[in-house]
Length: 293
Image (cartoon, rainbow, N blue to C red; front, side):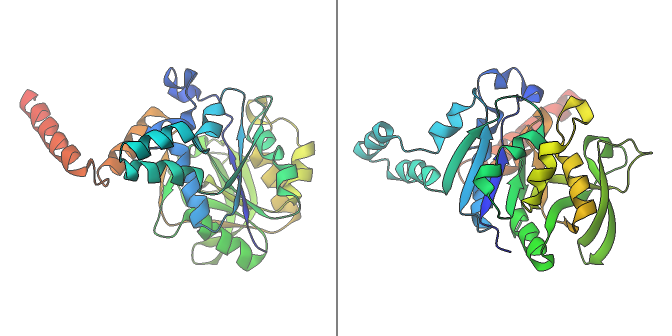
């Protein structure tokens, strides 16, 4: 079982980030000096992925343009002696083999993944949600791939969340297999605390077998009237074995304002061009707030 392909669903309307996302895809919002989606593609590439399909919609052609060459800009940078900037511009276009397909109707995450059926074929594939940036010593997608390959099955990335927060995620029913890896026997989408199976929530990363497509083709609309990936995964885990990987790393949900700002500050504190300035700015701001009482 070799995972060479990845799917990034990025067709959402970005309603949690309006009005900024009215005309700019949320995946293209800058995280210091790179758009959000570039961090996600870099994680996929670092995990051994060769081909990436981005599921978009008609309002997100900016992503197609970003991961392409821009001869006029590159020529201008070369003529201006801006070689570092030229390298970065070209690097984005050369990260991976990137393909696109549109989700013509907003029908949910499960429907978006189903749009990748022809691209995936009969291979296992990774799914990386376009909102979630993961920071880890070993890429989170690679942690899932290793778990999936070891057990020859699908894998979902999980971490524990509070009981109060579980209603924002999918809760999984698990039995321990080994350290940080569990068997999955059931799951549900956005449960109440009374409905939850455990505090382990699925957080933005999956490795799936192509069996999921036959299920998604027939799954009925669920939560919110949409085709939910969780409903498809629930059926899949009852038919075939599935594991959950309690991944090591930090997740940032950049699809909401607070998560986006949190990630921006953390990344800027580590970026060589902004770290020293931002530390000094935060010290001065903290002093001002303390003085105001």
